[in-house]
Image 1 (tube, helix red, strand yellow):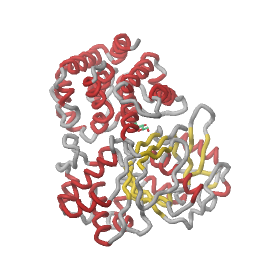
Image 2 (cartoon, rainbow, N blue to C red):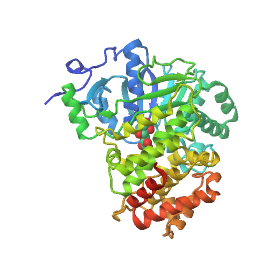
Image 3 (cartoon, protein in one colour):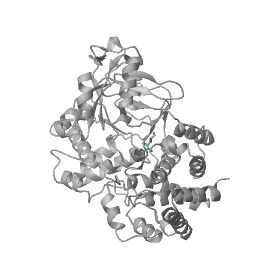
Image 4 (cartoon, rainbow, N blue to C red):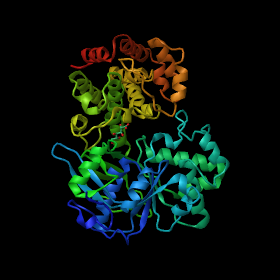
Length: 492
Ligand code: CS2
């Protein structure tokens, strides 16, 4: 049995490991949401930055709900193995940028104090779309969300992400601490601007002068983040141990590809982030739109349609020729809705995405992608569909994707096996479908969910006809038949 990975055993590692002095460097970043993606992405870039330039930029991460990561990572002094799976044999590195993991339910009374420490200069987030408490209709804070109502009534022990950030900024203002830069790393269009709006909406209700101060003083750079990161499995643990010679109970795995496009606006400084795929720019929005519509839109389409045919992983869907052709076509359709971006070859990007999805070494679960559809569809699929209509382009790919999501919302696959719909609006979905059986009934019920589809789509007859037509084939003849219909009608 190998020794367990920790600061003490680190020197026994057979693979690349941090050389910087982790014990003396101080924390500069507090990160909310310590999921696998944070650990294959921002923490890896920060590890490289510390390796090259040092600095007090260690990360303290906060798990928002469960204590699992903290209980496996803290005994390892925050160290973990990052396994990369590409065309060759897996490779691995030991990442040292995380100092400690906190668990929010255990530090509710302390979290603001932790953020207020002098050396904390960045608060970053990977909390997933739903944690922003965004009202999809207004684009501002969801004032009907019960947790938000709780936090608005008392900011002493906030429960929500907007509540925590406003309470911390309020203390910065009261104590004269220079405010930290707030860095959203979630898959939302204009993530920085969206977060700023939500925080200001919240602050305005509590204290209008705080909202003004935030607007003037606090920076919310937008970012585009990208790295396919399946949930770790027992194979991740065994590969990590084999490669490093140390036992690690909390390794992560990802594809080799990685990209991070950041608006460089950090008044209090930042780590010396660099490395493969790191780009600083003054405007992230075209990169974000490209990634959300091409990568994430295609991902959602293939997840919903794949689940209905009984598939489990993205790579399985890509191994079915008709499905793979649809993916190729969808990528192209999404690409055509995007304005050309200077310096970026969108055809090359589409080809890379196709290869990345097909990577046989990555077992990326479809259900991981399918979850939280109501939070993902607007920026991934609906906006592209609406622009396609506006531009007079074919909308077949998008109507198929939405029909697949609607089919998924019925909660049974083509073999009539039930599955759980994981979505913060799952109850609303089930309620709205309680009497709907036919394709038009399902279409009308789900189209009425507030904030999901822009009016441009719901008032368009061709859109309605196409979605209903695909959905009806999916319901009566199965997803494979609908896929063949897509292929025959759309793929050259
Ligand atoms: C996926 C993303 O789970 C999902 O919805 O589409 O997590 C995707 O893998 C990442 O955005 C890739 O960077």
